[in-house]
Length: 471
Length: 102
Image (tube, rainbow over all chains, first blue to last red; front, side, top):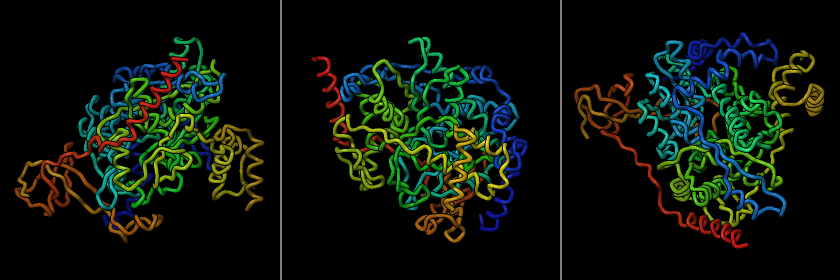
């Protein structure tokens, strides 16, 4: 592709996307900042019941939910005498492709088939690729997965290579690229060439698919202990996991459960840097996606993302790589559940959050993922060590992303760190205002930003005033 | 390495050269090309490693690139032993044992 081809392709972006997703996003735009998010979600055209049917048809969902009694006992050993909530876990690794992403893929691929697309394409280096490939195999559609996989020396993240293997196992073509956001342009080229459906992570289809997860949690907890959990910890990267799960919980009537987002702290690492690509041990679920997607959800591969985490999060915490690896090993050793590290980000956060809560309270970890060669604590730490990352026991507070991984020398050192959610909401509003003058804002814009930040019109107006003053 | 028509091969291609890359990239990324790898059945009658070839991917899409290898395999593994991992289970099991004894 020459630069000219590249620019020409980019200029056709809107047209290609419209054809590849089948949604006319302009219908929901107000012409100003506001857009009709709930209207767009209705565009899905599937009710929660229909989605449950679609998913059960392809073996997705209805995953087991366990109480982690040994982990709760361990947590209480590190907490004050009356503290240490009961910890529960939704074992999403039991989905056909080994993660909750099967829920997103099931609806997207079902819709693609219904709309008579011949195939589906997804740009993802994570579990979503395997999920789309698996669902496409079930429904007899062709599938292409585009991965950001290697650095300029051709060295690939073991976790991503394992995902390539899994996608191939389901009959998908896997296109692997080096680091860089231009992956999106190659992705557009493939969409145009094939005419396949863009099984984006961020369409209303994908997010609605996650709603069943929140719904099932409420239903299973009510059956098990007669009530909803007090807190739900959800790993956040692009925001779809938080958004879909929280929406499903609300649809089940669980309005009191606190929604806590969790990401791995990768502060200081640039996500588009070739040299830093292999200095991280988490390829998703980290702050490098979590924060930018929270403050600007529409940076995704569709015009308007259906993943809008600030609408739902009550709290946003970070944990460190060493803490997640430690908890992954602990889950295997005392609960007999060997699962992939990336799925245990929320587990590490929940271990710390449970310590703050009373013993009669309940915190629920909302996912797990499969594990395998490359995608496991040992190969990932081994890869880090080969890349000269220091690995040792100590206080995780000393961990420097890209330089060290500090395994906690005692589980009492596992600490979820709160991010300033108000500050993140302020950044979101600042991003909304870009290119707009506060004088031109409509009442609808203010209400929209209040909904987007789970706050109220007055708080939004006050934030805008202080932002203007700060200019 | 020589491959013949129908062999399963891996190819490599430069998608964007360094000067063609997007402007907003960090310098270390901008300095290197955007590269691509894919696999498929060789369509040329016969080719050597390094030749420009055409392949048909597993889903039936034709594309071109430089021939890299025949019968490509995955090399990711369970990694080398990380002795630190062995300490974690001993520590947490020990703590639970203490809790039982209390």
